[in-house]
Image (cartoon, rainbow over all chains, first blue to last red; front, side, top):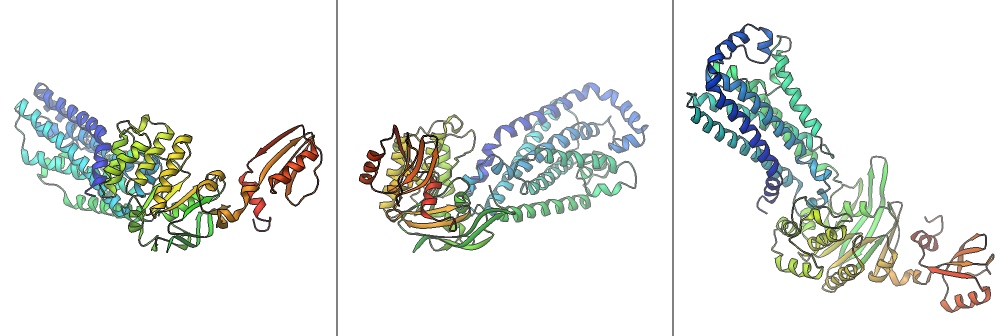
Length: 263
Length: 291
């Protein structure tokens, strides 16, 4: 049984992955392609945002130079990949274990000689694989679009931006995967709600000092383009906490799925 | 050795009764029927044996292996057909059968092809296009293609046409003759009577009786309705008498000759003879205290 469930999951998720990868890539490519035309006006946009105080800070726009391609890319494309990627990851994660019971296929799967631990492990691999494939497509399309418009983009900063988004998607996928083990009937609302809540946590965290602790909870903080461009590194202390959340969620998934009654 | 042995197996869903103190014994090589009305606990017993749900208390062994500790080894030797066969949407019949074999790490292509021919199953069709009966056939092939030692079949013939039901039991009988054990749950008495050598009755989550079919003696029992009659003579073979206007219904467990004599005496306007319901069979076998 060489990763049969992993292969099955990739097959089952093929169409959704194709649609999400194409949609996100297309939107990012469109943003990149129109940049040369609007770049001249972008300095005014930077000034506008820098004058907006707390509002700009809430969205992490106060330190972004829209006149530079990397600044524009980190906000526009960052938002598309940030929201699109995490919504995809959360919907995929939340359904990964629960869909077997929801679609009544659990009885077929679990009456074959495969341990529940193996099922969880292969499904987790399939979840991560699909996220990595989505990002590989997005990165390829981004690179192609940047090459077409012949903009100078710092590769190392771009790589850090993409890396932070991949880590965030894997974190949210792991958290929703963990929740999925406790559900019997899908839970897409819970998956979507988790992502949206974490997104708003980041906005609230940027507003005042009192709410700054939320930066340690939401993974959207460590994908903040302004910080990554300015510091030329990722904030590993926030990432470490995110990885810890992900590990706890994955352990919870193994523990719960191993002991739960399957209907 | 016992193919299935349970000892005080109990399952509660929260406070809701599933099965209580189920003691079941099925010897290797038996063709064993598991019979009870809907909600009696047949599927709960089977699901517990297969490790889909965990028992609240009690012990169970399959082929001498503990259901909790040796689940993987047990499932290698079992062919299971659920009462409701559901497969992954979008896949073809062939894909599902191959997937089932892959999950067992076995090459079952030859046996699967034979079974598909016998059950007249088109492997190129999509699962979503299949009728209930054809989905059942896919389940049967998945349960049989690896030639397991123990067949656990939960309401196996629901949805199958009579011809396919016959073919299904033919294959099961062949496998049984080759040495496999068959454990078959059903609420259809005639099915159990016709094919099984042993039967276990379950009701309200408790085992009522486990017996050889030939010892049960219920084959002679009939449900009789007579029209144009208001009273019946007393007889040890007549019970459960229900009178409504000029119609009398009762359970008859005597010989056919005595029945014909009785009918000649009574001269009814109309007569219906049918198989008794399970409830009536249970009432025939057990007193209210035992139930």
